[in-house]
Structure formats: structure tokens, C-alpha cells
Image 1 (cartoon, helix red, strand yellow):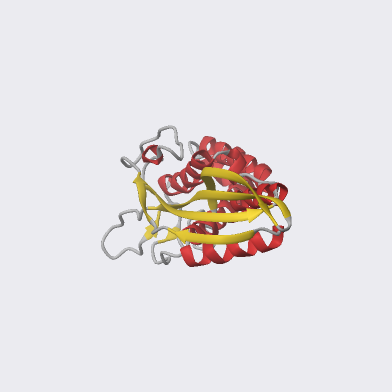
Image 2 (tube, one colour; image 1 turned 60 degrees about the horizontal axis):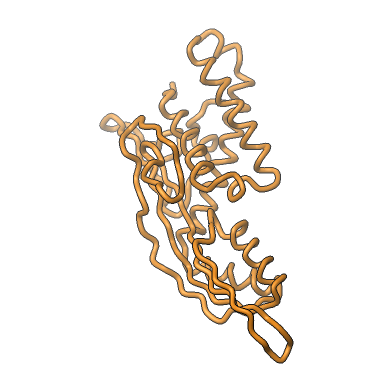
Length: 239
């Protein structure tokens, strides 16, 4: 039988990401309604687990909650993998610049590093990207910074910044300086941009000797450091 603590940590991972990034950064388009749905199902499951009979009678609600969380575990895994890979971030930044007609003069990646770690198991606290140490229990937040110099029309630079925040993992613009300049093509803008790309990892849950290790929430401990697998796929939340 799967533990309530396991389910709760997957839910906590979703909530930590949403809190750390802010609604505008993580919840874009259809993700907004999916997060609302996931939270609604989590509330329902939390209420149901106090009564085993009701839980058995409410399998469809548990299944919906499981699938909603699976979607978010997958999103968190993909975005975190990109945030932890400076080489891939460089490629994506160049692709975005080409798409909006912006010239990149420099991209300088920083090294990924541990930004902060949860305080203690079961701790809950408000989260902000400026203070990720408050991210909660068992969640580690890491950050990679990228320094970018780009030249283009004002509209192109604005589109580029918007794309950076939406399409380069869990990203935010930390600093931005824009300088007007004249070129043969007319008036342009030189933008010096520093971005921060966050990744979120759930710490392994201690298991009895000989038991298969799992990350809380049913995400297998055997998962590589490159991503987080689906909780539904690994059986962590029973359908």
C-alpha cells in the first residue's frame, strides 16, 4: 500500500514549483487549468484518505488526481532537465533568437549549482525564487544563470525576452539593460540580459533494507539525475 506521505510529496513538488516561479512563469496557457484541476483533486484525495471505505468507493477521483499529478511531474522533469543543461540552453536561446529576428552577440553560461534545500521533512513555508530555502521539505532547488547580449529591433527584443521566460525551462529574467544604437538597418536596441533557470528535485525517501528505493510520490529512486519520471508510470500513486 502506498503511503500518504509519498502522495503528499509529489503534490508538494508541484506546489513548490508553482510558488517559486510564480503563476506567470510556470502556468502558461493550458497549464493553468491543469494546475487548478490537480489542486482540486489533491484536496479531494486528502479528505478521502481519512476514511478507507470512502477511498475504496472513490477510485475514479483518485485516478484523476494521479493522472493530473503525473502531468505535472512530467512537466517538472522536462523543464528541470533543460534548466540543468547549459549546452542545451545555449542551443534553445539561439533558436529563439533566430525565430524572432534577433542577433546574439554573446551567450555565457554559468555553472549549475545548488541554490537551496528544504529545511526539514514535513516543513511547509511560503516560497519565492529569491528565497528558495523556504521551498519546503525534501525539495532541492538548483539554478543555472545565463548571460546574453542580443541586438535587434525593440519589438524583436521584447518577443525574445518573452520567449526566454516561457521556453527555457523554469526561467526568469534577473537583470535587463537596453541601450539604443544606430546601425545601417536603422535604430536598434542592444540588450544585456541575465536569466536564471531553476530545477526542482525531490529527495529520496528512506526505505527499509532490501526494499526498492523510491522517491516520495512514487518517482523511482533509480531515475537518472537528468529528469523526474512519471509517478503514475512508476506506480507511486495507485490508480
